[in-house]
Image 1: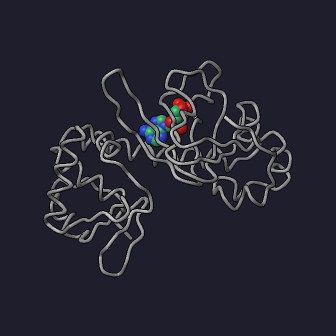
Image 2: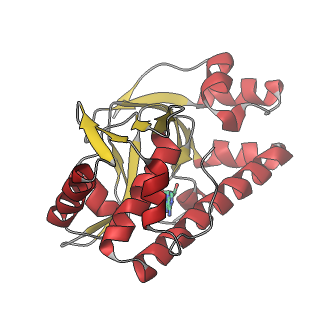
Image 3: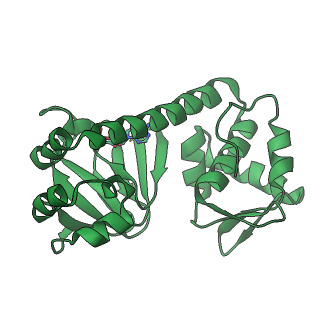
Length: 243
Ligand code: CMP
C-alpha cells in the first residue's frame, strides 16, 4: 500500500457522495487525519478475517469484495468510484473483516481510521443516516443474491447478473444497447453467480449466437436488453427498474 499526500475537501466532496453534505468545519477538522492511498490492479487491500481499523472511500477504480474457502470464491459486490468499504469491522474494536477486498483496476482511495470515523459519526447526524441507507441497499442486493442462488438455474443466474451489470456499470443507448464500462472476465462472472468458468463461457457463447450480446475490446455489450430480461421473466426478483 502506497501512502500519498493529504487531501483537500473540495476534491473529497466532488468524488465521494458520502461527504457532500458534511459540515465544512467538521470536514476541515477531519481531512488532516485522512490519507490518500493507492493500490495496483490485483492487490489485496485486506483479507477476510483480518482485524480491521480503516474505512476506504474509492476515488478512482473498482474493488471486488469476496468471501472464499480453499476451493471456491463468491463475489459479494463490485464497488465503484464514490463508494466505500471496510465500515463493518469499524463498528467495534476487535471485529474482523467480513470479506476480502481486492483492487480490480488501479485504485485510489481515501482511508480513515476507526477513531476519526467514529468522531465523524458522533458529530454529524447525517452520517448515521447515510450509513444506514447504504447498508439497506447492500442488504437488498444480498437478499437478491440469496434469492438467485436458491431459485434460479445457472443460465438464469448468469443472465440475471448481466442485466445487473448493465444497470450498475453500463452505458445505455437509445436502441436498448448497453455497453459495460468495465472489463469483467468469465472467471469473475462465474464468481458472482456460483458457477464454473466453463459454464459461464458456454452460456455467453449461446447468447452471442442468439445475437443478444457481443464483446468489443473484451468489454461486454448487451444488444437486446429487453429480450434478455424476457428470458428470465417470472424468475425476476423485484429490484430497481433500468432507467
Ligand atoms: P468489513 O467487514 O470491515 O470488510 C469487508 C467489507 O466488505 C465490509 O466491511 C463491507 O464494507 C464490504 N461488504 C461486506 N459484505 C458485503 C456485501 N454483501 N455487499 C457489499 N459490500 C460488502
